[in-house]
Length: 210
Ligand code: AP5
Image (tube, rainbow, N blue to C red):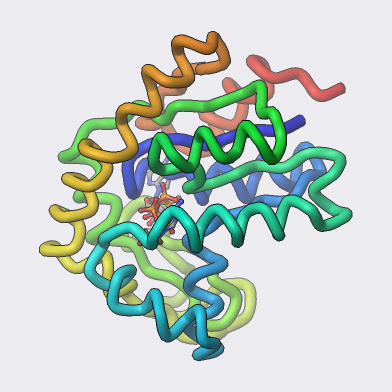
């Protein structure tokens, strides 16, 4: 199955995508994660996009589309995938149609107030990238990853000025994709407020495995 996860920053797309990837045995492809890995490794791509991402702005469509085109050509993506954080603009959505047709777009519905609470409390493992939340999904030991025991950190784009900017960018450039996909009759809304386990149950009911 080929899914797009659409929604504001902090809606829980990455958290649910990790569970769906496991449950449906398909890869979780997060453009944000790919960019962060490039920044960590200080590749030419990483150096180019670091300041843009830290500020909460969008990387150019050209760069992002090529990156996704390459990733979707890999063998593991042929049986299906979850695209998390792509497309984020109308030109990206139009380009994707020329790469591979996707027939399930999941729109995460959540209010700004909850987004701010989720992002300002998010902690991420420096080593394996696992997400936590100080209140909603705390690690067993403060500041330490449960899985690999590495240190947890706060993403630069989870500082309050960047969160506010990301929400503006989302409204201006990404929210129009809701109507784009609704008009194509491939959009399914999902209430992103409950616990992840409850959202996963709803998701599995809406999208039975083949
Ligand atoms: P990206 O990494 O995609 O960031 P994002 O879309 O802003 O999404 P987030 O990772 O912030 O949130 P999420 O919805 O995945 O929430 P999460 O599950 O972590 O992109 C980063 C940057 O890369 C962009 O700003 C841009 O610069 C660039 N970029 C990426 N893609 C691009 C593109 N296509 N074009 C151009 N530029 C691009 O959850 C958040 C928190 O809430 C966590 O702490 C989690 O534990 C908690 N939580 C999750 N679910 C629940 C729940 N159900 N209940 C309670 N807490 C929950």
